[in-house]
Image (cartoon, rainbow over all chains, first blue to last red; front, side, top):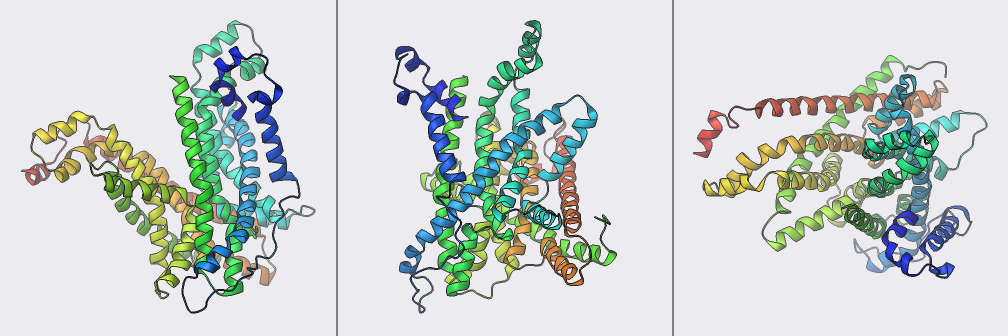
Length: 282
Length: 239
């Protein structure tokens, strides 16, 4: 995703420096950075789920808000936050891929395919994610032989929920490609696969990127719901500190602060992307 | 899965609990609409301070997740301000209302900006006060633009009401969990079927909201389809 935009943003540089070193080429560096980041966050055991959030300072019992306690909760909060971010990223990966196929299914001319897909999309879109999470959890528990971690259930639920949103974005993006492009690729005798991968998708994706970014931020906002299925994320941290220390104000407020620290920059980045793409289109 | 249906008494419990869900939805809708009107208009104010405060509110309400906001408002703030006896439904309404207000303000701001500028200039030249201008000229025209996204937002808030079960209110979601506890104790029934039925209940509620907004859109479209935009009483009120 970001490779394409990065390349587009520096076309003139490419002309003047055709033989840059590999580490100065966005087309090489961006995937490498993404893969390393993705591996370190999603796959490697570098970041582990914390089982017990136990603060090492105790609060002053006489006041209703203790700044010292508040500050010292930060490292624990960050551990919870990372788990939440991780679930969001895995879920969004699923949503982006699954959403595309849902969009294709909905656009299909075969009614036996497009009608059920439309019904499923509408159903998932208008029901709460929380209930869906419970549903997936119950489904996993009642089926034999399948045993999923809570974080996997959360990522699955988030992914399926936001796949329906993403599919609408894709559908709008694909519909925004000019009809003449389809006719031209038919006239050039391109196979359906070629006209999709080489003509339609490259033009549709830049239009879709801002919407996808918005859904990533929205998915991050829903990820703390994982506390309901026992994901050891941001709200689980706050709940556990409250149960441990009988103090509710500090953990929940610092959870809110940590959340804003991620979501506001993310929203700002998406807005910048949106502006940049609309600027390039004009 | 032996049966796709629950027993009659379980359905009755769920429908009773959906009363709480609808109640929270209506309350937070009212709070949300008021907030979004006030903040949406304030976002376009000539005063820099008013604009800044409105922008900060919108950024906060849209940046924070509704579930974290709910936990802060329902659990952390009452202790901080020593109001631990505050009714939960009020706190839940405030949290969901703030959440809706942030998104609604942007919808209303966009709709007001979409009304042609000549309308504002004409009503200034007709010596209408700013309040009259907003009430009788700008908002009625913005309404056709506001309604469709507001319908979607209301469905989002309906989805948000499921969260209040996590802070201890008995809405549909909490009732479903109670029924599940009962099922576990009796060792009968399958859990996915229970939650599937709850999902369908929420889907029906969402479709009702959808229908209401479609009706409202049709009513607005009928009203502004030629003919006088203002009724006699409204004309009288302006004079």
